[in-house]
Amino acid sequence: MEARNYFTGILIVGLLLVGAVPVVIAGSLLADLENALMCKCDDKCGKVLINCTCSTADKTRADFTKMLDSGLTVEQIIQGQVEKYGETVLSAPTKHGFNLTAWATPFGALLVGGYGVRRVLQTWTQKKQPPLPESGQEDSADQSQNHPSEKYSRQLQDELDRIET
Image 1 (tube, rainbow, N blue to C red):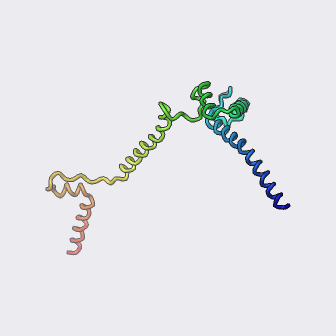
Image 2: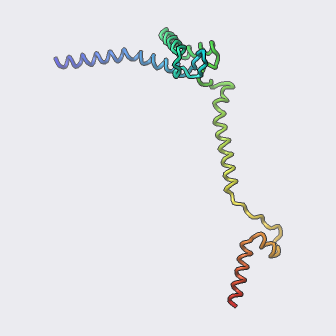
Image 3: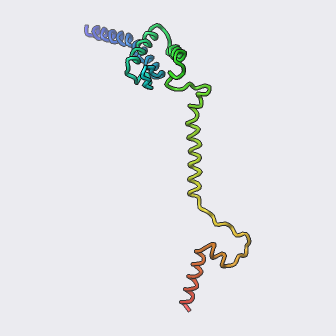
């Protein structure tokens, strides 16, 4: 008797889960629609439909639920909204035609900006090399002006030599 109650319980839970699956699927389809479309309320809130709480958004959700229940797909409903309101109803630009630049431009700007920053940093950190003398024989005065440390080293050595003698 106890095994029979156990299996009956499992059967009831299974039937409840199977009955809940279409509700979950319909909810996820409605969420997909709400994420893909902007709210078209009178006060032009500019929010994605899933985030809008106005009465127009509630009415639109009810309309979408009826459309989904009638058998229309998410793509068909989105296409109908685009035909009715234009592409401004979409929450993201399409990925073809001129709208493709809206997707590609930020990545291109990041690449160009990164390259520019790299060049600037290389320029700032690059050590400047002294210019090479054009002729191999320069007088010592010119060399000491080009290399002050050599001038002072030579002067220091001369002073030390004088002290020793």
